[in-house]
Image 1 (cartoon, rainbow, N blue to C red):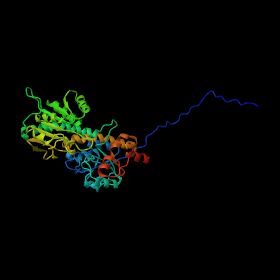
Image 2: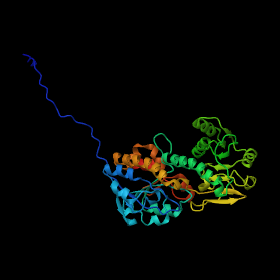
Image 3: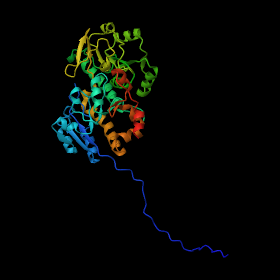
Length: 404
């Protein structure tokens, strides 16, 4: 039996093949609606003309209600030049599958909401009502809240920006009300040579407290910070970069310090929602006439017993000769800066939504975004809201996994 020898060729011929690349599927085109806010004292807008321009150049569609940016000094022309469509009918804006708002949902918004719409807005527990949630659940809305929107480093960028604005603004506001023109004590908030510095007390060593302390120190004031978390006090000192007078909240020490201060700032936060009252009416009655209290935590009840909610039009009331400032939405008083801060977080997020092929894909891949969702296709996925309004709670992770 003869074996056939294998044929060996001395020349191999290579043929070039076309290169195949792993191409990502085409991103989804977004249709975004921005209504004009009618909520109390809301001057901000969630996307600036520059951000709208970036979205439109990426192939997205933006519809804006006329004069929506007016309170933040953004004109309709700025938006139309950026490529947005200006409409005069609110229902037209609400037809967009994706709504972006700078204020929480108010009662008159509910009838305009479309089935299966996606909503990005603040939640504001104090403004939310059970019947609002039930109507949104009926319409199978998916809702994201600003307050719980996390970035990939685990921080809350919009809350942080708003707190930085409020903290920095606090000292500017206080300085204004200390002047003689505003029936204040007639004291300049600053360190003038040969004159003892103005004394500032800050309750709370969070971001608001930190930025208020930075501004006060920069003006040359003497700053004393109270907080029950030693870790937060330590972090504030490290962030500001200098040693400061700090203390846990001990009532005798606090009462003694308040007696001699010119400015007291309430910047305490609480995990449960309502701020504890740490300054009693008696402590306020012993403060110097003409001194100023600014209660930043007023939207969660306030930490001064004598605080009351005031408006941007009538910002102060006087009790025991002490000027009280209790405007709840301080960043709204600096609407343009606040709008830019919100916009710089939302615009990249919306581009990411498009790249991933929609919200569902995005939250499947980006776990940190799940904390900001309180409604998913009509199911209530926020445990605190379900407890507060006695509504059925559904675990978001299970919901998402079941849809894959």
